[in-house]
Image 1 (tube, rainbow, N blue to C red):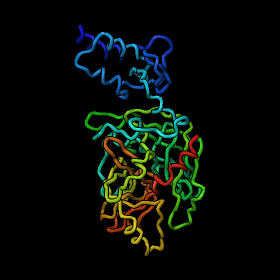
Image 2 (cartoon, rainbow, N blue to C red):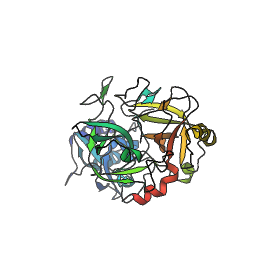
Image 3 (cartoon, rainbow, N blue to C red):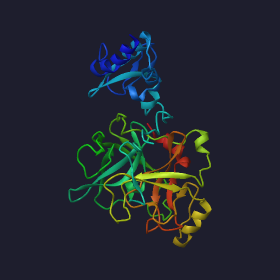
Image 4 (cartoon, rainbow, N blue to C red):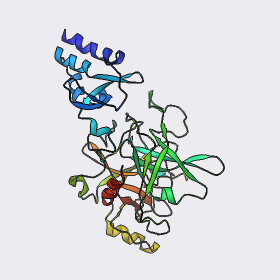
Length: 362
């Protein structure tokens, strides 16, 4: 009888909606024990997933999972996950914490390799409208909660005359494909385009300064976005363990659709591994260009043929710590020839702007 319960659970979850008014994805809810949570996919609720994956379920466990049903998203059922409230709320909690951010399901970027469909699901694109009526994606960004993306200030202030920031795209993989992106028979969800409600550029950013100090901006989306396998936020290094971690000499990753060694932008999302550079050595590399770097910036790369490049601006430089990715840098600028040996790229040091970010989140 217990094994029958195991087999019946997925069928019921797929076919039935909870009693009463069905909730939508990410809506607040209460589980059968009257604990507050959020209405999310079963696969994203560790507590319920642990029960569901047992070899044998007791009648009480089976009943608990069935009673946790709260609604549907498309054809997939949702469950009320206790304690998941912080994973969705962007305005009340300010910053998300692991495991509600920084996780993906996958174990010009010069020298980059293609990502998996579900890899780095916080990587976003900024879309611009142009005077001739065309549109295009020319900067990256990172989703940090359900309402905000973080990018570079120069992606807002240093754009050509007549260009306007139009919106944000999430969940993208192949820019040349208008439908679902698929690899080896596995298909991602259709990308989501979201309008912009507000743009907050750091008040001390000056695009005419060669050093591009304070190259950071927040973009508030016009609505909350729902998280999925292909759209998730990245964690910020808020806690002391991540905030004061010595990352010099360690390896980080960057991802985006920027210019590659072919000289053209990539149609698919690429990734590259880069070593975080010693700041003193990096500063010396920019002395000939009359650029003085500050501690609000960090450097990565410096190996021939491996770098971020034009079009990657605003995108993430991230470190995986255990199973969680943290956003440590925002692509800012680099040598004229991307991937120049011994000249690392320069990134906005996110750790130095945690208070600024927090103060500007609504």
